[in-house]
Length: 299
Ligand code: MG
Image 1 (tube, protein in one colour):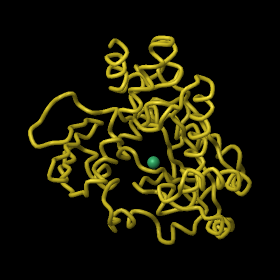
Image 2: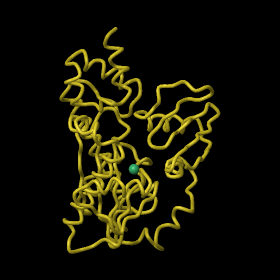
Image 3: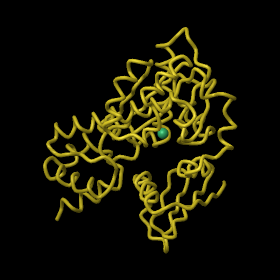
């Protein structure tokens, strides 16, 4: 059990709050913005200090550190960024509306200059428009495997699969399918954008029927260590945006990304229109937004 405290600027703090939206604890602690528990306990203080407690504290804290820790890059083999690697990432975990998406990309050494030239980089540094323009070009350049869990399916399996287990299952499956696609070629390594400790990942992996266990590397901000992860992240995001847009057209309301108060308002409209059965097709019901929306709908 470790404790790590970092200091963040105000705008960064709101990103942190949005990210852990689904895991906010319903309790008021003096001098804090919020307390969340996602395996790790995250306490965000008014002062800007954020405390991470638990076995995965370091990985969670690293997610928000603006300066890259050199310790983590040492865990990867030398010249890792130039190797032929499968990278995987997920998107949608923190958004009330829309699916959960995981993507694995195989980027071999020879294609890396092409990806770089296309402008593949950390998707957080790209606009939604850039992401949507890049996605088809990435799909032409590299083998990939996308997996989508629709909100409908998510709500069915969420009671048995906690968020971490669900992600482990999806990453494992995407990697496995991609390995089949590129066979007999084998990657020099598989880099998973870290969302839980390696120990935890391997624990949940054992629950899967077939498991990719070898040559795995875990690192937070994985997109900084190999373009395969950056490309996977872009494909995830592009697909997520597409799905959200498709769902918005279908239901007749613009479904926002994230899990803020805008989401509550839109969810309340869906509840009035078709109750929980309708909402469950579009939103991850276990988020706190559902209860907030129910209160708004009752008014
Ligand atoms: Mg990620």
